[in-house]
Length: 518
Image (cartoon, rainbow, N blue to C red; front, side):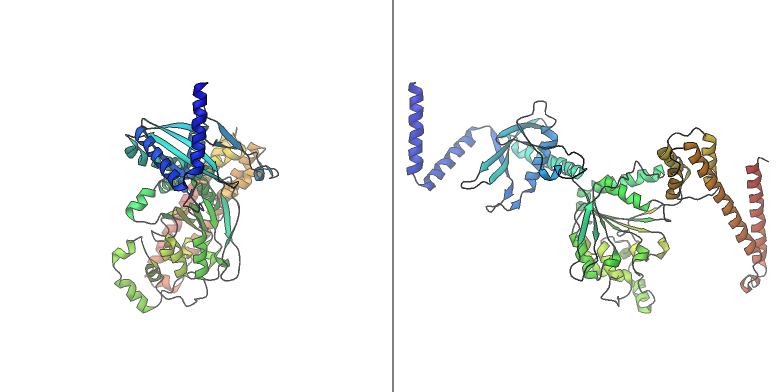
């Protein structure tokens, strides 16, 4: 009882002193007390506030990293988790037909969770203080590390935490599909919808070697932050996808976005009025994004003027090293155009080059630029050089491996392997069907695997015959060619044509005999 009486007396004295002593003196006494504690404790403490500065308006990125790291790495995997706070915003439950989202988990205020790093024990504590005369809270995390090792452990531990949080945010964040709307000059902007395309590299019917190379290149790019900083290159990469319609270019773009967990910005060039609008749209794109221009050869007339003699002389004077320099600026882009654009009120090749590889293309990082075309020959070579389009991917007709992949995915196991082998043989004989065409044949017979494969083999067989007939027509036309050019070559062209047609007749005869079992 006497001890409790003394404690109450001490508390009363402290209350009186707090009301009597000046605020400056109380602050000084508190600082001295904290310094005494810090000198006696074996730990170092580091505060991570939610907002920076006295105004508390600028978010602290490190606070967000700690929040993500604790949520995924410690709170949900701890065998004996501390006190947790569960929350589910009303906006999540209000979407009709939406999948049920799990509640978010956070460390409750004034509770701690331990962590271990390189043999050292760290403790995170969550603080939430209510501001005086306000309902707002000032939140922060504090990190406790052993004082003897804090200086050596802290930088590596924060780098580990930031990398883990970065991966977690990339895998969990909702992604968007953006497109630019047709709008008056000066108001170029994007609108977006949720990106929910189901295509992945697992569902793509691609050659295994091509798929492996693409995955390795994309992964290396996404993990290349330090490489791009060390080499002084902008953290971006260009892909050109070319091939006939239905070869899977759009599906590959969606698979790339899903693999990287990037937003997609689908740029429609015909809706862009000027180069300034194009630049404004580029500035509005976010980091970790896929910027796509589909059918680049049809979007605009983007062929530079290469007919000027002075420009050709200028091109010859350029040193060879300039052609291989992948860190071009806007002047390099204009040199590649080899001419001054006369239509200053429209999007020009020079503007597009600056968009992909000029100074303005470096206003963000971790961006992938993708062009698609059905006719690669219709694109100006200035757009295709390394540094702009680094990786060229040709997506052609469906190969034998891709055909079997599609059959397995669309209709499952097939009992008639002989018919499947026949379909594969037709592909090897030169029959061409795009993955979209093969998929459509299988889709309309997806409940009858045998019928699906039989119809696919029949379609491929018809295309082999059509290719043989076309080859015969081309050879016959060549044999009967009596143009003055042919006559003026001392008869050699006619003999060469006869030799070629006889060779083709022999190959066609052997092929037909083999198919008939002769």
